[in-house]
Image (cartoon, rainbow, N blue to C red):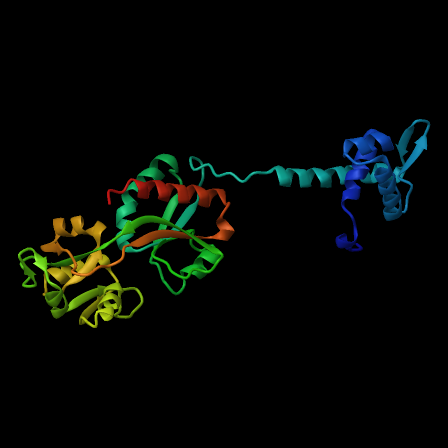
Length: 307
């Protein structure tokens, strides 16, 4: 079969053909597709050249289709109807009947905040939709979003490429954490001197030993000792409870840690900026109905958090 180069063909001619076949009149066909009669006459001339056939011949007051026109009419109609159906189709997502897997990249601490409410929503609104959680890998989560391996990433992100969108969900602050009866605490508070003087534990996913507190201390000409780095939020309180280490945790975790571990919180003696926990997604999924639904559910769950 000969391959036709469509870039060299005005496909609007097929619309003109359909109008002529339906109306059997150049004037009526022109009115049907909202062009002038001269333009329709010109389109008919180009159609005749394209198909090497008269296509429509005047018989009395009517433009009758030739045998060639009769032969191609069903195919032209089918092609145009397929285009119309494609343009009219709206992507939908019905969570009640969907059987889908959503994958979220997030930290264990943020997952602990949203997971109970998220599972409740899935149970009632999307009973056949499954959820997969993976760790946020700072070096690779953008690529995972681009390749549609994950649907959303939840965390704190900076310098995202332009094709990745993000939206802040909650605003967080650091509080200090130490074991009960820690010698750094005097009269219910920790001084800057004592804060710097004791060894610290640092949560990090970057395999380094520098955090926001270290950057703030450096501006004051101070430095703390990082005796432990750890990538697990929920292992941190067991280490703190069994040592003289100090650490900083997101404020949303303090109630849980104090309730379940022999630890206590204190105000960090530094002016530290707050930070946003955001959801990030690929702009390739901006208008995807399923991703839109998921983003709205995560958004709603975060609004309900008592932070």
